[in-house]
Image (cartoon, rainbow, N blue to C red):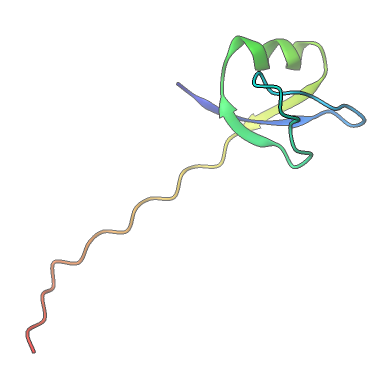
Length: 65
């Protein structure tokens, strides 16, 4: 499923589906009908979630010493 970044609208305190309060800085969450309803109601703003960092390639250089 697609991740989105949700942030509470100014002056709003928004609860996550599990009951915890959404942080002011926002959070990357799954794009679900719950968050789309919150956005339609003006409770949150939606942006693109930051891309996950790419894992570093493992070096195949084996040093013998």
